[in-house]
Image 1 (cartoon, one colour):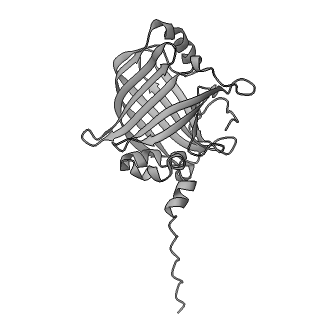
Image 2 (cartoon, helix red, strand yellow):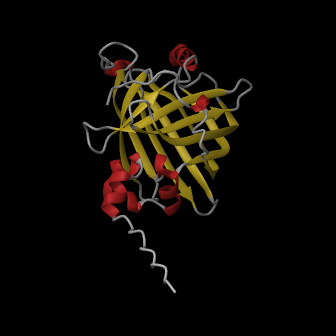
Image 3 (cartoon, one colour):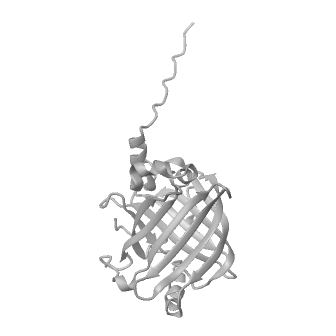
Length: 246
């Protein structure tokens, strides 16, 4: 009688290898990724290899914007799913995070946020890890990746993630010119997991050096992790045009 060979166990990837081949956020944070709350690690730790999506649903306790001076810019941005002029309280909210390889072969994560006002508003972004600046993630905003924003990451004392925006470029224009500081919106995002509520919490603030506060929102949500089938990610969460800037 022939004895079947014993299967060779699949070797586990080392921590360094997992960071190098894992999510764009693991690459950005490096060893600090392990300091995130376990639920935050799950939410920000998957890549296109995992073939899953993180779908969040909840409510924004408050959505606000600054002076009337910013309203025309918010209205213009809403045409391209970049911010919006509405404000309110207790607004239903959802966020769709899919990881995939874009047309340039780059590991990409969608951040498609939907705010259910009387007229639903979307705030679309796709993120990639910068090849030129280790630790930096590039956040492409809008339906056509109109703006490219450099993001920096750090871990908060709550085991949450603090994201701050840096240089911004108009990727929709030839040469991707840098936005003058007076025209930029500087964003700070803090997302963390609230063990008492069993929910993720988020606080977003955008300001401008000239006019001050621009827009912000805070609230909470829960997440579901869904398999992505062979058809890939839904077309409605992908940008219409992709920028080659890295």
